[in-house]
Length: 268
Image (cartoon, rainbow, N blue to C red; front, side, top):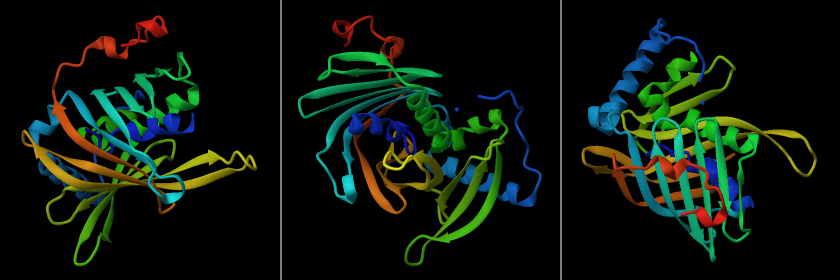
């Protein structure tokens, strides 16, 4: 149930084939107090206590890659999340099945077509951790406080004809930051924006990209409101879409789902 779920950091693996000891920081500046108020309003907008009490999420839907900005062929997915940092995503399409599973600081990959099961690379684990750091869950649940991040108020931004978004910024001690936008009217989550650096395989140069998630089609389930569509953009060009078809909260998610199978034959 992420805004966006970390599935957005997992799909690169499919298509191309975060905890410190710091104590929580209190808001001291006036801008920080304003930011805290916006976050509290957003928590109420998505369900309040019902939202905060969610421990597991099981979502089914379609993931669509946008190569060159145009939609490709959708893949079916099932996403199992156990908060705060375990996730298993299964993709099916084109006669193949791919599973990516992350637990804490490690993970594994299964590719049915290639008949392989292997540990994730450090880069893939890092991508997952970045997904956790930038997720709306991280902000609203306050997990960022354990890493000593600082929350500040940015201001209002245009969000369409006659609409404005309130914007807050989360900055970590290592300098990494994320901006979150919420509808000024009711506090509902609207956008997540951050920057990432990546090596260009053509020239080996390090390039910086602006990543943006637009949270669309909010639907309320059991008193919890979630976006059923998440569009991801890189430097203003759409790169993917997640379209949920169903979401279940606090359903039993066995620990065995996250355990790496001993062999390909043992994959379920």
